[in-house]
Length: 601
Image (cartoon, rainbow, N blue to C red):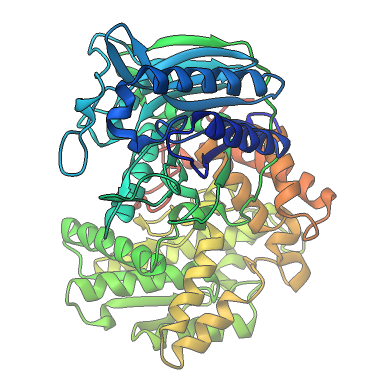
């Protein structure tokens, strides 16, 4: 697939000091990696000889053997469509450098020297090696569609890693050749550093750690190789493998570049890197695994449902304080969005130590309302201890339709929207009577699709769910239900598992939102990749076909994507005048994450 590359971090079983044997093992690993579609592979620090050779690095025979072994590796991998990054001791006059060779197509494309040499605790590298000169700029290798830089072990642990200096020039991957020892607690710290650097630079970070075969005279090398992508660990070999090991991850460079372009502080940084071009046609990869719930993958930390309610409560409580209001009004329909908004509003009331009676639930049956959803809405209000009111809007809507010359028998957009706008007017007027704030209930998915009525449910005094996609709304209700006592548990489960409907037209079929729009699971998939990764339509369709294979027919996926793209573009005029609301995942407010003209074709 376009823009996707498989990268690898390998830990070979080492024969300490036997450069020829080590080159053979690395050749075997590189060949196996190439057979599985890997575009680039990194090996550990000084892997040609082994890291723990000590003063043997001074010897001509050891250095000559390392040079010969590296040449053999380059020669034996010349036919492979793969870039390899190999650690070796490089002699240069009277100096020896801890170095990495970048090889492809039978050539060494470039050499990167270690800049920061540890000389503390178990490390004593400055005894044998010379650090890279400060004046030497970081190198970025451009191998066809893949841009990467290289740093060596301690370089990452330094105050300003070379990869941080190189990042401003744009790197998709950082390859780190490491010989990091292992003792209690170090593996977790190393893993966190790799994860954070990938997050900070908006790239993939592949670290290959020295392992079995290194000397254990005074320390142990666990061989914990790993790959992180944009702040998430994508692959980890774990510690103490008994044989050679390799971890792979597929990297979407288009997505990473979009994220970096969107982070203007990255673009503004000084560009100091030297660009090294590699004449390579690397194999593109198919995704190894595609999440059908990317919002949860990105934002679903442990207890994420509690975090949503905590953010909503803190934000709404602050708004209540600034408005000098001690009451809230929520229109509750018996659907998922209003249920989550009600829970967030209740949490805000609790945060301010106000009585739950100050939370006013308004149930407003209309033309398409069913008795079941209306009773569910009232039961939910009572379950959270709110003050409940029922205002039937049917007669008011009929009078208004008659006033404007509508026959009421025509179930057109005016027929539907008069109900949404009437409900908003009722809520606003009750809020004025009670000196309260109207809490909006619409979610991120509906805002993206424009699936709301302009100046109807589109409008409120504070929009609680504006940054929560539909799939997370439903998931949060289920998780809150698990932690709740009866009757709230049963009510929330029933709401979360019910069909999604605005209930504006009599008859169940006419009200099924997903029958008209397509599955929200697909819309949220497209919305995430559109906002987070800048993915184009062709690639979104290809990803969705793989992710939802066997779940939705191709026709449904294609039609839903077309609907998403069309409605997202058309709905910008609604998003340009949305109420305030807290950012929880992505925000489509023009004051926050998303700005675009509302009249774009």
